[in-house]
Amino acid sequence: MKLLVTGGAGFIGSAVIRLSVARGHQVVNVDALTYAACLDNVADAATDPGYTFEQVDIRNRAELDRVFADHKPDAVMHLAAESHVDRSIDGPSDFIETNITGTFNMLEAARAYWQDAGKPDDFRFHHISTDEVFGSLPADPSVQFTETTPYDPRSPYSASKAASDHLVRAWHETYGLPVVLTNCSNNYGPYHFPEKLIPVIILNALAGKPLPIYGDGSNVRDWLFVEDHADALLLVVQKGEIGRSYNIGGENERSNLELVKTLCGILDRLQPKDSGSYADQITFVTDRPGHDARYAIDPTRIREELGWRPSVTIEEGLEKTVRWFLDNEAWWRKLQSRHGVGQRLGTGGAA
Image (tube, rainbow, N blue to C red; front, side, top):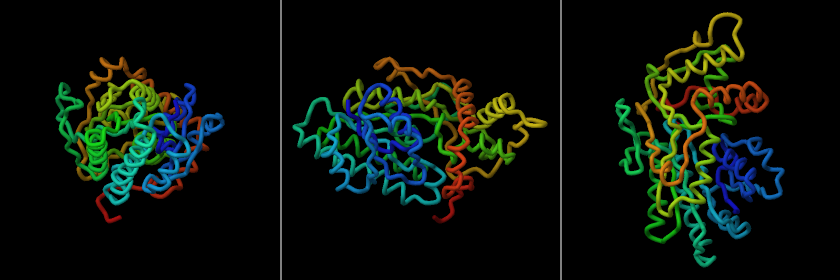
């Protein structure tokens, strides 16, 4: 299968590419190389003869048409998106332009290509989204997001992703474009860009800096190891039912405070401080505006229809992640100088 992967130099996209190449697929990586992208993420895959890179912004429709015409993919895996909630609070315009207008351009380019090719039955447009489109859940553990949960986005980021989801469904219903959608929980793992919670905690801990936790740390997330997610995405693009959405979760709910304490315990064991615990560096900071209380995914559909379950527990995945960051200082060190990394964002100030 030849896959056109947008955002393939990002965190999740690069995991998809590494796994796709390892499984023998041809891959066209379409990425604009914005601040959160890093071609080192796909360095191993890039040596494969079936891999091609196109530096293209999904806001550029003409270039997208060229990429489709040149490479003739069997399927699209659309991951390119602005994804950091805090940045969306400070500067929402990039999220509107990339996540909404960019998705519109992708849909139109894919539709034109699919129609010109005679509407092949095996073509797929896989749109990868987030559970944040569903809003916030109560503390009751019996309540989880399902594929039929009404959308209730609370941040500019989640609103832009919700809008893109609606566009994808509309292009299926209106034009017959063969689409599948997935909404995932919080990803973590190797190559995680160092502005997100888990890498921030790991790197601040190693640097002897405060470990910032928003509010009282009670916000709950369902954590999904990125390599498990990539496996699920490839399964959906190949075997998912057209027009259907699948929620992908890690089945690992933890509060932010629990998560950070677990990370500190792993670091205490793998790279102990001269005295005390890394947990001594925990610092509670002012919560961000509109911070959702809890996310949790009901994975019944993907488990029963496609036979997928996550393979990694949160404890196993966090240890793998900490070990990877300890072993790859050269990778994360150079990313720390990029705009906004290491700074408090998402306070609601003007962009």
